[in-house]
Length: 212
Image 1 (cartoon, one colour):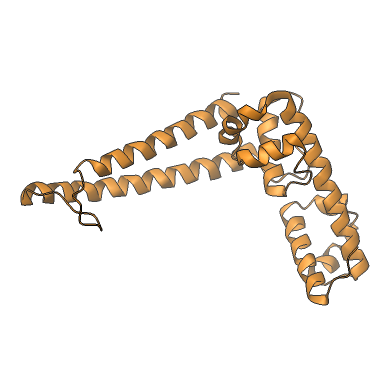
Image 2 (image 1 turned 135 degrees about the horizontal axis):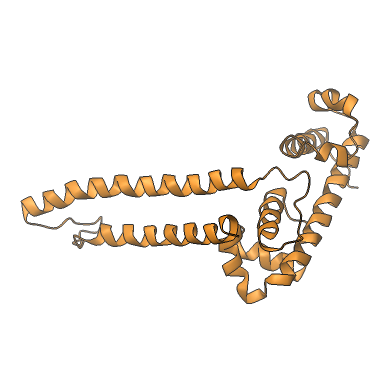
């Protein structure tokens, strides 16, 4: 393994602790004894131990990525990667690279989402025991983001109502930064487009994760 500076070793340990804090059962998988948990979390082990754990985590990610590749290959073709990107919340590029074997070690954020997705659409695909995502927590976060976006659009529409009334009172349209007139219904078109996209996200999510 390439020789690392003290700073690089410390940064590597910070990243490792982040992974373990997010996936606490990962500590057992990489061989951190329970009685040494506090010591490991509040100090810096030897360089050899840090590198050992780092390699264990890499191997774990590789194994999980391979299992996901096998699961995806059963249901997702190259052309369907965009569709399944919408359903899983993972980019179509990442899905294609995993299927094609170009990405052999995905990040845990991708692993978590794809495991949850595959668990929802493939009957015998089990979540990793260390996966911190649950259907309930993921649903709350995913739908919560959509609800916030709908609320933002609603605020924009309220402001648009005021501007529309002002345009009617002044008998003129608003102008853009380039001085060109803006169609009075332009904001409605923008809002409808965004709401349509959000509707598709909600419907897709519900079919995959709730009405499975």
